[in-house]
Length: 286
View 1 (tube, one colour):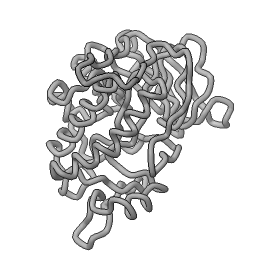
View 2 (cartoon, rainbow, N blue to C red):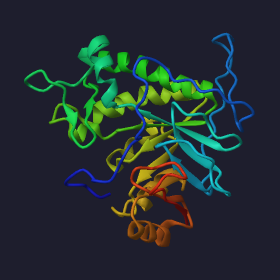
View 3 (cartoon, rainbow, N blue to C red):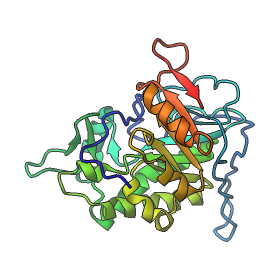
């Protein structure tokens, strides 16, 4: 597996701001593989977790929902958007960092759950102006899981079939304050929460944690720019080809399609993942 000396400069997250104070619950009906939630006893069997197919055409819509192109069978959308009717829906959650407009909520309600530098200021992902969440202790991870886990529950209640928690690699931007083990332990809590709600959970990027996928509980992968960094085969081998690949340049997309397009789901999107109809929108599948 490749080791990146610097963080890939294109790997991106939703351009939509997540709601900071609670769970964004979108309504939707008649969804394929939808989940039912009731007030059953703890002895009842957990909802069935259904991972995505390996051969489904995929669209990455975390920058804003729109009608999927013909032939698309799976989409990823921000947790504040409604799932796409009749498709396999993956719910995007920014799980390891705070959206910029949510920083005030974290400072007011859970300031100690923000990772702090030596001067007491939040440690930030400078590229996206997002403060890192502090996964360094079991107590903090449990509290974070209560907050982010409620968002995961909201994904299930809205009708999504899976969740992709973003920024699993935040330890790389933590100034040495976080480790892979810290984030893997938090990811495990989120995987347990997702499975309890009947959601599959996807590993988002970070080949360095592929060897821990089973211990964490990941069911599939969402890999940005694996063609650019020659990592697509690593994800495909680990997840039995249940991989959603997103590339942001024509050259990287062509490279990825020629090498792995027959095995994994692959899409070319514009860097800002704009909805269809907006200037600059790009969508292509292998």
